[in-house]
Length: 438
Image (cartoon, rainbow, N blue to C red; front, side, top):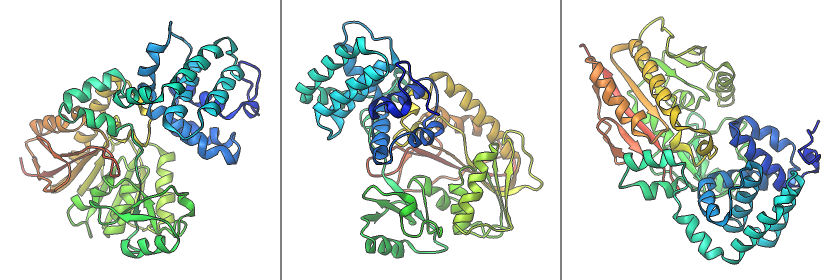
């Protein structure tokens, strides 16, 4: 049953912009897009869902840039997150989409009224009309804005002074859609031919030998071979994990923090371990791992899914290899999850670093002497990556870094850092560690 809004309209009576704004406000109030988007889309007419999705993600991606160009236009602060969201949504349409300005303004002002703030509709109308007359100047200002919350901008300037301008620009872009071919079923060359025959433009990734980037929008379940398990969706930089590991046939392997299972599946596509333990503390997310393995035809008796806390879990026998895709701030994947800009807080970072350290120390105890632990995050903050490793090596005499020799990423004190790049992968960090006799 649709809930009435402040103005008395039910969700189904609201225009599309008002529905977008309600979702934006939910994010401002702390709800992740992943948790609410599916339910929100169900309330939108099918023909409007693609536009709804684009307006949500695009407005969030440009949120702080839109905020920076709006502030000088306001005589006094709005102090109203609903109307503020309407304003940013209107500006996004005018400056970043092909929607005609008159339609963007009309629909957005109607949304302000439908949401119960008719008294402020004149302010929104006036600002949007001004911007529509001066699009060139406002587009320049939008491009110049770093588009980050101030705490994150300070951290990234400190961590990456030479890369900051390019990095803040990259984080506002749309990430490419990348597939990982299931090499137990089809080669990359064969699948590229299949896509070509279906009229779908795609090209081989440069860094991942099993990666394909789609050059056009696509409905993933409708792509050839999806139901039969021919491929998975996975960022190119995330796909590098498997090629950084030693040979794993007949070995005991732990995938710590495994959900949603991209790396688990990739290991099984490339190797036949004696045993693979996929651990995650979230049982629901672990069920997604099971679903993915089933679709990819990778269910094997030597694979065990374990619902457990990686800070305390104890292995029955030590592992030859541990893949630790550690919990992190996820700043490196903001392009795909732009709600992170609003949801992540400065105070979250210290807590995340402490959790990473706990998991690292516990999983290290589960590793054989001579074994390899691959530490991974999708962060670009040095505190979670390079500095975490500096502290780890200082505290573990039985740890030796195995340098990653590669022509990708940036060499750090320990490990290698990939930054997000237009047309390429997201921000990822890798550090390879071998356990030696202390």
